[in-house]
Length: 91
Image (cartoon, rainbow, N blue to C red; front, top):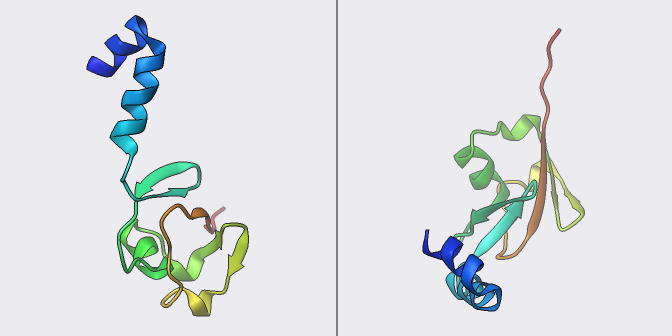
């Protein structure tokens, strides 16, 4: 609530507050959404933690297609930009 009030009062100050609040946070971007990054995170760990089935997922990290065989060992680093397509079938 306080941030919204600052926006109305002083837009320059609000940018400082937003920068301050996100400074030092380790984040990754997945399909344009921010997620907290944690040390030791791999593609497989992220997929399972977020209820994706690894064998039905296609993953790109920073524009590079990741092989399914690499999911278990492929690290996800702070500030990585990840795209995930989860395949589904149906009629």
